[in-house]
Length: 135
Image 1: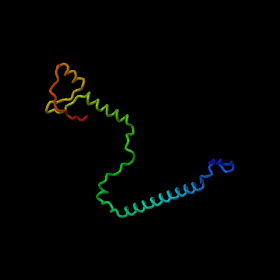
Image 2 (image 1 turned 60 degrees about the vertical axis):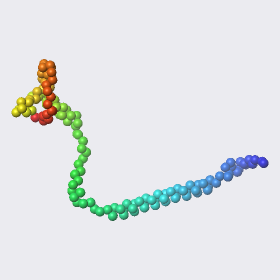
Image 3 (image 1 turned 90 degrees about the vertical axis):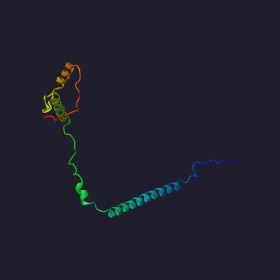
Image 4 (image 1 turned 120 degrees about the vertical axis):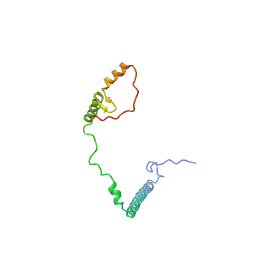
């Protein structure tokens, strides 16, 4: 057997049909685009028919929905609000007042309470915590 060597004017890849490969690529791209357009149109038609078959919502459901908030619900100045919260908490911790005058319970500053417990040398019997709103 003799091997055939290509001549320079024939080109090396003479047996590859580039034009046929290009035609197949164009055909595949066209079929892909056509399939996409068909599926998209079919989906839109199905969605439209389902929307027409849906019953309208009850007016009671519409009336029971909470109103939408207008604008973003953000704290405009969170640092100022945090400082106000901390100062209110500090006033409660450092303040004097009655929690239950009839029972003889009073609110004392934290530092004073710590000093009293340290002077007594023992912790008092604990009662359930009382919720005291700042005045």
